[in-house]
Length: 386
Image (tube, one colour):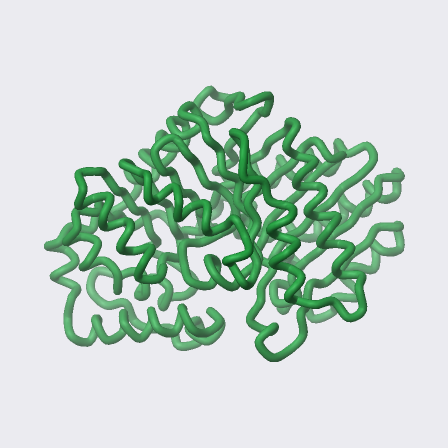
């Protein structure tokens, strides 16, 4: 693996997986190499070529005696009509497949948005990509995303979190309010590598509180945020870094499966540009990456920089305190900027019509108050050069 893609941090090997096909190869390698245990927790698993290959690899692992446990968010499975049939081969082979589905009411808004794969308590994958062909391929229309593969002494912390969540799901009834406590108890807040989990009631959990603390101290901030619609205090902190002489670079999406998320991000551009924040929109394909670098600290995992991920969803982020890791990830960000369009004040002003401002404001309201499925159905026009 090239040196700009892999490094050692505190007895851990960290490897970036920015390509869809290499992510597919990596997770199949992890599954096929497991000797005793496989724990997978993902938001979305599709009944397509990639999803079926992964399921079949899990079936093969179970048949050779590996303990296989799979948790998928119920909303992420909504496109699989025959879920019992899809998971039957795994269950018949002795594996376990669970659906995370907190029922109705306010709990209906909760998404288990995490992406975690662990083999033998020592080899793990985290990041933003789901288990579907558009995340695990490099064809036209595939998502641009990022996984991190790591081994080392902190992986058992991730295993313990999976185990605790698995046990919570077996409780009848299970209390959603327990999730905040689980996230807090399983997180780590010291050391070069810190697992930070989040759940509803975010005041209990290290994420996003850990990021907020890092932003207060940062002089250089680089963000790749596919979905960008944070609350006012988060925006103000980004502005302050730039206004105080620091540098802030933000990459957001120019393409998505939900135009409202792009429009919601553009609602924030004027104030960020006025403060001196550099903004770029990624052009080649749909963007799904979640990466934040504050000085020498990297945050990488499943969380977007939007209201839902920061305050509602269940998320997993790895905080890496390492100048070498920050340098490696900034090299990655520089490559993404080369494939992006800079949003200058002049370009933003050319888009800034009354109609577009109305769409931006409405989209920002919708994506911060409602589920993305609502705004996706509206398919707002972006206008301008889009």
